[in-house]
Length: 148
Image (cartoon, rainbow, N blue to C red; front, side, top):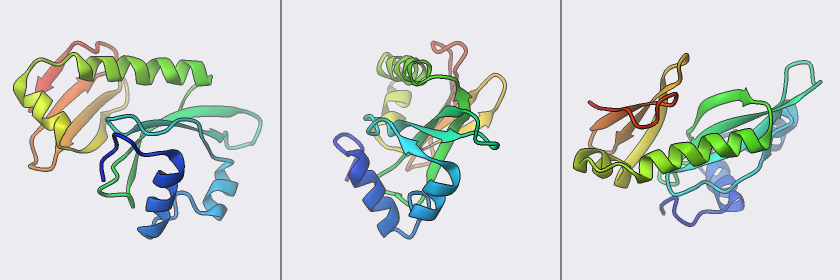
């Protein structure tokens, strides 16, 4: 299964079936978690959680791989004040990925295994394929990609 047509319900079911506690009732209750979008074709989705004192809901960007559903990568935990702001971040990152014209980067995206945080400020993501090839993306300047 790939991320191209997976729903929130499918993502949760696959994750729970794999033994992950990410979407179990206790974890969801503890964090006050809500999932707002299906994973897109790159596995990016938006969730929100209550802040640590329960006074505010903040939005996070996460990565889900249907082929490895027991591991969900958090790319920006509670960094977005609104759902609209989080949607803009995902949209900009998706547009950047869609516009890549380097064969190597396109191949990584077609065989994407993980997206992880390389650096927090500015947020730099490492996108890795199943064969270990990767590239990095500085999210403050979406058109700057560095092949690994």
